Image 1 (cartoon, rainbow, N blue to C red):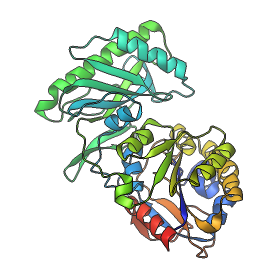
Image 2: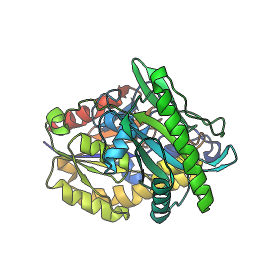
Image 3: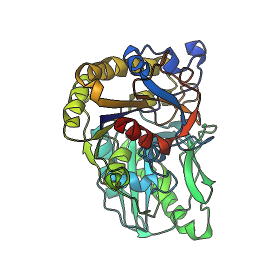
Image 4: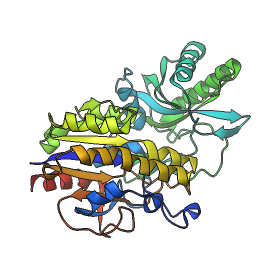
Amino acid sequence: MNKILFIVLDGAAGKPAKTLAGRTELEAAKTPNIDSLFSKSVNGLMHVVGKSIAPQSDVAGFALMGYNPFNVPGRGIIEAIGSGLSYKVGEVALRCNLAVVDGDKITQLRLVDFSDSEGSEVEELINNGVSLDVPFTFKHTKDYRGVLVIHKKLSDQVTNTHPGYIRERIGTELVSVASKVNEMTIKPCRALKPEAVETADIINDFSKQASEVLIKAGLKANYVLTRDAGNSMPKLESFFSKHKIDIIIDAEMPVELGMAKLLDVETLKPSIDLRLMAKEVVKKLEGTDAIYVHIKGPDKYGHLGDATGKVREIERIDRDFIGELIKIVDLKNTTICVTADHATPSAMGGHSDDPVPYLITNGEVSEGHFCEKSVKQFFIEGKELMAKVISVAKS
């Protein structure tokens, strides 16, 4: 069996952008190294979570690992576990965004260049300055992100206060899906079922007190938006048990780290330098069957609405990571998959339900450039991709 490199470019797919002459960011980007892989690949389009669903990174990640994305813990739980917080089944965990508000208006949903030291200060102020009727823990995780765990058995059937994500029922499951932000106004958390009134009241009390503490301290972040409440832990088969191969996840975000813990998978912290990261991945691949590499860059620029910035980031990844990788890896004995976990069109400034392209190197001849239009126009679901990659590696 070949070794496997499963490379996920976060949010790289998109929609046509006016600033790119009607092209998507992948279409506009010059990616000779990814294209060299594309030229000898089976490829296509993928609905990562499902048709007409704009997925978040948590359910998308589980789907790409081969799991049913509607049978995983809520994102709050995944990130709490990924950031090392204590969590007991029945407690409510929520993903948080540190934001900026002016009165009842949200002026910044995500803070650019928010430092770890600033995040640590926010964490300390909230944990020491907010007093609820129930015990809780707030933790800053990465950049503008955080996690809140309410240490009491409660219902998780509540709305998000983050306007970019709404909770919808898909079949029998209540999940958060990305949505276009139409109104940047603070909205209270609401109970979706009568038994969740207490949960909503606690979250609203937390939000009010946390904002008062942060405003008094004069910090850049002065509000905490919540989303993706969870209180249950579906039983998940380990990755090895499911796929019969060992894998390492190379990622640094709490959601991927939480996914790794839940699937009993080793993690590798990526280097900031993409060339060094490629060398580390190839070296680590010697001792395992596969590595799942998650590269965050493109998503950031999509959320900022910066099409040219996203193009530059995709080109940087192609030049520094993929370019270095294909120089040093044994391409004859390595199966490489390149894809995205979702589309983050800069034209929207958020996730969309557009399908994403994928390639799997297998020696087939494919012409063109790796992008949404050039791949073969047949569709798979995200949860099928890992098995497909493993099958190619074994053939």
